Length: 225
Ligand SMILES: Cc1cc2nc3c(=O)[nH]c(=O)nc-3n(C[C@H](O)[C@H](O)[C@H](O)COP(=O)(O)O)c2cc1C
Image 1 (cartoon, rainbow, N blue to C red):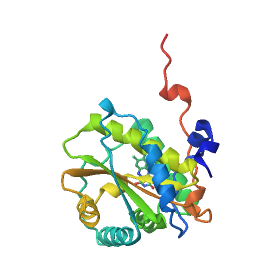
Image 2 (cartoon, rainbow, N blue to C red; image 1 turned 90 degrees about the vertical axis):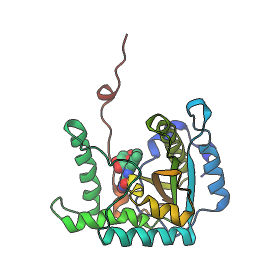
Image 3 (tube, protein in one colour; image 1 turned 120 degrees about the horizontal axis):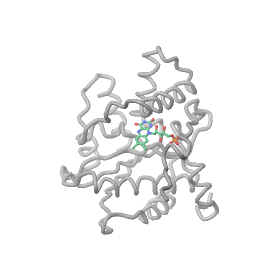
Image 4 (cartoon, rainbow, N blue to C red; image 1 turned 135 degrees about the horizontal axis):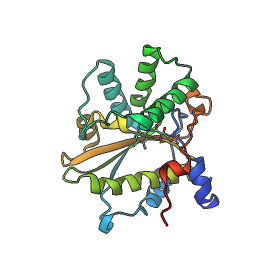
């Protein structure tokens, strides 16, 4: 697919999290086009604080092995940032709905703890994606600069989708930042904000049948006269 051939509305509607990939690397020329387009993301004072490392081949394999090993042994997570808060009220309802949609498509019952653990492990197996992009920023920056990085991440996800690539943003790629820094040669001054596993979607993977909705417009947006 050519990114110029799809509308913005289509790109927004078509993008969704993909959690199962073909064993087929994305050509370097496509990677360069996609990551070049995402560079158009806006940022405070145009500082462009995002730092990106794309792991493929051996570095991807080593990362995957290291993370799977650590999670399987129950090694505590050591993220550069605090974990997500405990969600309550409507946020908790949406969180549960989202988990139910994913486990439902994977055939995992709510009380099936082993199944849920296996589903969680899929994150660290990178959902079998041939590539994982780690998105970081300088450790000195806080939430205001993280907004810029968020802008970049959505630009990248939309561009990937427009190019016919599947991707999943993964907060879980924050859990072992020291290993990511060591394996990819990332300086200690950089914090890992997020990982994105990506490649060509395998439509036969059950998790890829997952669809989640969105709240009605009036729950999120108020037009004030
Ligand atoms: C910042 C962020 C972190 C996320 N972390 C994970 C993750 O660790 N594992 C996962 O399977 N999905 C993760 N997701 C995907 C969300 O679950 C998904 O975007 C949400 O359910 C909406 O579904 P959609 O992307 O298919 O529209 C993350 C998404 C975002 C934006």
